[in-house]
Image (cartoon, rainbow, N blue to C red; front, side, top):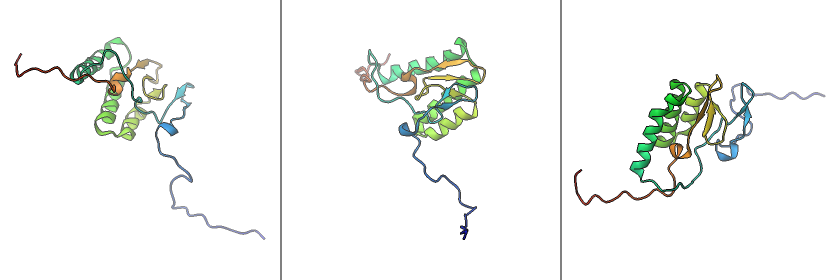
Length: 148
């Protein structure tokens, strides 16, 4: 005899799920055929030489975001990338940052958002130091109370 089981139609969700993070950052094929990392993360800890101070790093980041649109790509895509990175850095909310990127149709070609493409195929390179703070940040020089 065939036994009937009842399936709850109001239940939502996955049978099994894993947290979105490094372990779940598997590439998929993008809509245009390239590799896409939908669960990208910010880069893991790293060092750069020479070690910058935090103020130097912030200044370099601002210069990067201000000048990149003149080197190619769409200003709108650069603006979305900046908003996503800023969101992930300031609030730690990587999910919202991923939504920014996904809603703009950006294809993330690397696991840590360092290389992305827009829907037209334009390439956008983002250095690790823009995405995350290096582990070897130098201390700020002492000013001894002098005002410049």
